[in-house]
Image (cartoon, rainbow, N blue to C red; front, side):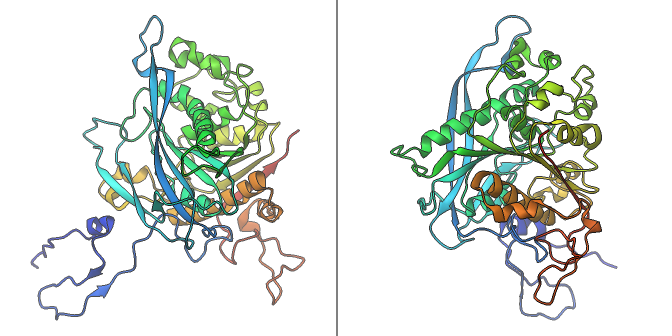
Length: 463
């Protein structure tokens, strides 16, 4: 049989948005009218089985790219083997989402990124691609309901400020100012010395908090003027971003870890060496790196009882924290990793959402179409046992419940954090004709019948 040669690549056209209908012709096939394809899916759009708090909020979303410079920072990448570490002005690019005027879900934009795990890797070249979004570039502010709590988002190593747009846009539509950082030396395009990431993650978070407060002040001249309530700040971090967020919120590093950063610079982030900013009121830690299982997996065998943390370090975390992790996480680790951090941060109110059979990618957008030609690039985003749109919707639900509770004081949101049974598969869906729960109902609140599957949820209070 003669092979058919198609002159277009459907996946490539779909990834660029240039294909909206399809009328491919094969030999011997009668010509028909073009078949309309559905609109391109945007990260964060809802599946029919999305839980209750997944949908976008009432606001349309504006977005701006902000260039910041943190002066006089230690230049870890160029640190000599001996002698003083030089200093430099550290650039940071930040994507900021905020409420604007218009209908919820209105607006269209794209977020640029590149494939790969750093520059100059011929097996994974830094190929540009764009992620579609439902926001409007440089839109005017909508101050109604403001000022709004601040959420700072920190990506993995490597990653980018656009790695979690399904969540950043969603939160902004619900009345948050969301600032996602491109951490210098830690993005897909500029990945450099790991020691730079170890030191700079919490420092970048706190610098951006200060800058967002400055831009949000009255008379700043920024679109954010009058919009930012930095006194109610949440930190959202994924992998190395979770590592940094935990430290920024008070979990000081143990002294054993000092050799990993030149010049003993990590001493500034030890337990007792710094004060926690009281404006930080909540942390969401997706698969936070740095536990004992994580550091041992990279050959570091001199850590504290919990990797970068010892008992005193974890005890210093007093901010309410939501951990989200897969029970097969092979990067941060589950048993001996994230689960141990959750259990031993004994002075914090804490929650843990567990995705059964998920590995490390509990946080990113779905894999972009351009990754379909590369196993490694595809697996940077994908969870083999889970549909990523489904994971994204569940994350939207629980992160909204947590942040609405801790940053906005919404009692109605807190109900979604009190699940009747920790194992979702054990829940019983038992409802009256009007939809209200019967006495024997133990189903997770906010989930439709037959949809609370494959998850666990735990809560521990401060001792």
